Amino acid sequence: MNFPVVFILKIIAVIISITVYNMFPATKDNQLLHQVLKGINTFLVPSIVLSILRYIVISVYNARHANRAVRGNFVLGINRLTAVLNTVLFIIAVMVAFGINPVEFVTSLTIVAMAIAVLFRDYITNMLSGLFIMFSEQLSVGDRIKVGEHKGRIVDITFANILLQNEEDDIVMVPNNLVFTNSMVNLSAHRSNLFTVKFELPLYVATDVATLEKEIQSVLINHPNLDANMPPALQVQEIGKDFVRYKLELYAISSSNKLHREVENEVLREILIFEHARTKSS
Image 1 (cartoon, rainbow, N blue to C red):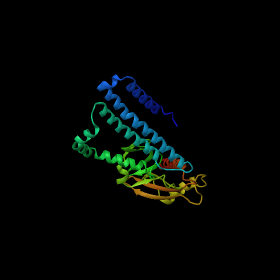
Image 2 (image 1 turned 90 degrees about the vertical axis):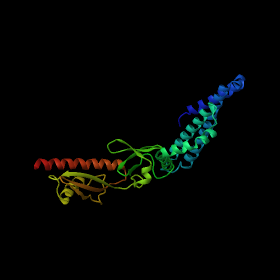
Image 3 (image 1 turned 120 degrees about the horizontal axis):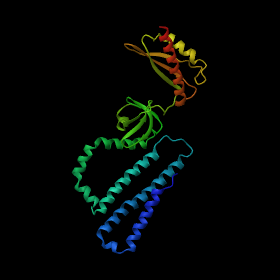
Image 4 (image 1 turned 120 degrees about the vertical axis):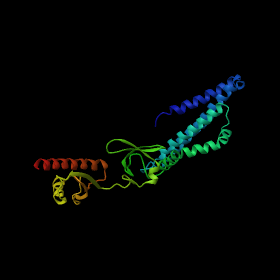
């Protein structure tokens, strides 16, 4: 665990502000300085209490789950929620420092607040969706998921988006709402030894399934990372104007995504060799 530098600085700041207020009576007569010190403590004291509660909650959670693997994002959710609460405390502290009563200010801006809520409705619903995701057991950072047309590994979950790293190593920001409004598949939740390799060949190179399957099986036979009892199964997915799209189903010896990717790369490499040989011969 990292040394809590910010937490220590907050405590020091509170001690200094209290010391200044008590040792220098003139500060009580100075309205501006009095309000500034009051605003500082309005932020620091609740923030320190919030940090202590956060530490206790996370410690209890980690202790309860020390002997079993968990897929949730409880710690991530607590950290994000703490950041939001600290932001709210900071805004309240600024109001107090300027002599503004936060309760009266919010009450007087009720209509404006409602208008803002309507304008930022999508962001608010995204934020709530993000909280549900963080505190749920459905998704976790590192999972490979498919949401709508997007597919990749989760690298982060924010209040606005899920950050996915796709197969081209691009970072795709998927709004949290899409998880609840579109079909979502967690490819890591239920790992399977079965995986698919999709590819396509030009129409002038493509051949019938039996011939191509025989070529592929001759390469993959006795492969150390494939289940010998489950032979590869090749299917034609689509025939286009100038291409044929295939899907190859393979059974690996484990559910490791890394292993699946290695075998997939080998298969695609052999497909390229096959395509090059057919093109050269024709």
